[in-house]
Image (cartoon, rainbow, N blue to C red; front, side, top):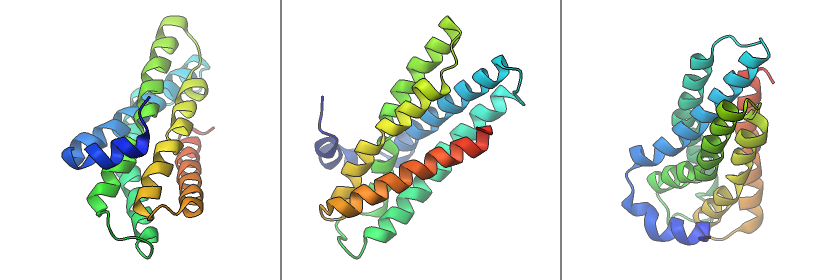
Length: 167
């Protein structure tokens, strides 16, 4: 298992931001797809494809916006990381959500389980640790500030999901 902070500091500059944004786009697309499948199974769905596209949009728009806000908030503490670095770091932080999303989609289709919460939300929660690592790097290793910001970002993302799917 790799330390998220080491991966961020050593490899993130080599990755183009469109490639990085593919991670949250796919992760949230899969989370919302699972939500749509779960809702459809219960008869409460308004459209599976529409929800999946909304998830992709969330990954492409909301993740960079949260990175921008966090970057602005930590500027007084450390100016060594660029906005582009912050966007790539926040985007890659959702890698666990992408992995959980893939596993959840397989379980949803193959086993017929409702998986949005068990796999999708769990993946988003696992993303908080890499977010924390990115924020520590962006804030000059200010752990308390990073913990608060990572918690707020994680809660905001889950709140957006809950409102979007009507949970």
